[in-house]
Amino acid sequence: MAHDSGTRTLISHAQLRRGRGKVVYWTLLTVVVVVFTLVFLGPLYWMVTGALKSGQEIAQTPPSLFPRDPQPQNYVDAWNNLDLAKLLFNTFYYAAGALFFQLVLDTAAAYSLSKLRPVFGNAILGLMLATLMIPAMVLIVPQYVTVIDLPILHLNLLDSPFAIWLPLVANAFNIFLLKRFFDSIPEDLMAAAVVDGATPLRTLWSIILPMSRPILGVVSIFAVTAVWKDFLWPKLVMPSPETRTVSVGIYAFSGGTPMNVVVAASVIAAIPTVVIFLLFQRNIMSGLTTGSLKG
Amino acid sequence: MAITTVPGTTRPGRSATPYAAGPRRTSLGRKVRDNLTGHAFLIGAVLCFAVFSWYPMIRGVVMSFQRTRRGETTWVGWDNYARILDDPSFWTAWKNTLYFTALALVLGYAVPFFVAILLNEFRHAKGYLRILVYLPVMLPPASALFLFKYYAYDPSEAGLFNAVLAALHLPTSEWMQSPGMTMPAMVFASTWMNMGSAVLIYLAALQNIPGELYEAAELDGAGIWRRILNVTIPQTRLILLLLAMLQIVATMQLFIEPLILANGAGAEDSATSVAYLIYQHGFFQNDLNGAAALGVIMLVVLAGFSAVYARLTSKQD
Image (tube, rainbow over all chains, first blue to last red; front, side, top):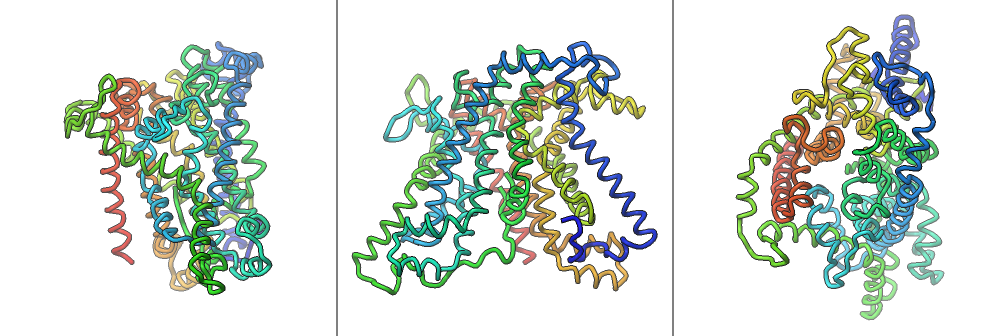
């Protein structure tokens, strides 16, 4: 949307197209593009190339802009010594399960609250939304105690992926987003389905879900990236080296590992979310701006 | 998490629902069946909320008044709170956390707003600039923080920041090794990592400002600053207040920055945060009850902020 000249903003288009305005505009744009590239891409460049430098080169003053003698070995060491394949697989597995449970259970709940509207539905929605006010850090200890000894069932979920999957279903924000989207689907469509004898499940599957692809996409992307970015909760509930997520694994190894190898591992750990972002940036941007949320 | 409504996307259907005991057949059996169906769709999510959210909330409060030793739980009244308040690190942690929150509000809060105003004026390279600003948000925080820890905040002149400062003939810093720089350095890293989402939310809000308002202000002879002051800020006031509140809540939970950048406590305890203290009590000092009490105190403080926020927003409407 480079040339959406439709809306008027702070400064008028005419002013930016003429004489001095034009010069100022192009100067400022160039400066901003250069500065932003340095500020936001610069550190990433530094990270990727820094991890290619030898231990001596990284400690030299002033630092070199390009690695003089690239050491891909740092990345190989990171991959092998930290068992990154295993860590990445774990994280991917948790993310996939979290996505599945959130899509199924939160979509069903939002559909019920929006279209089926059983008794006490609004009270339940209120209680769900109230959890948005409670900071995660406040709940961390009682949640942990609950997970190591589930009420009634007396199961210990430590090292079980359910300890990551199920708490993530209790995401009021997802339910709010989905419900609001379902609310905007006309009731007439539903009524037509009912006349045709469709069950509620059938209506959800054949009418609501196909119309809700954009919002389902947004919820999915945020479900996956949330697992990838989370740190403290997986650190607590996945204590064994075999079940760690990639962020926790790198942190656990950071003490006894050369720093270039730690950074190389950090680069590898960041690749999946960056790729997801570049692939789906349009959906993410529109999710942020129309759904408007902050994680 | 922030919630904002964007006009035109929602129109809650208030007309008759086809499934909810509608006008079609209102026999009692039908009503019961419809309600049961509705609750069947809800049950999975409700159970997850109950077990992992509602119950822990209550349990946290209860735990803060108990003490568990060798499997035996006894009711100890306010003992945990007394013990926590007696500990000097409690006050250090709160001082640090509030300092971080204040500093993030001063340094980090205005930046995304002005970046959004700037980006909103550009007719070119919009997509590229947005991607740049949002890119750090997508990095796992641990990855980004190791970059800062090892490469950017290296106290020698081999570090990225010191190299830049030295090249500009500015004084270099010891960063995380100097108690005075710990907090500003953490605020900087945190702002870099997180500002992208605020920028995008502001951009969406800015695009909803009717252009006529700017035109009218310009006809009245208002310059750029006056237009920002009299049109942009009042028109985005609710979003600005909402994000301020959310930022306060988020920064008060400061945890991973001190854990990774400062190895927890930092130079001369300059980095210990309340959340880090909760973690220490709960998972290293075998004091889950004390940690629960710390959590309740944090909740009360944040509820206080929310109350102030609610007053601020309701008074002006």
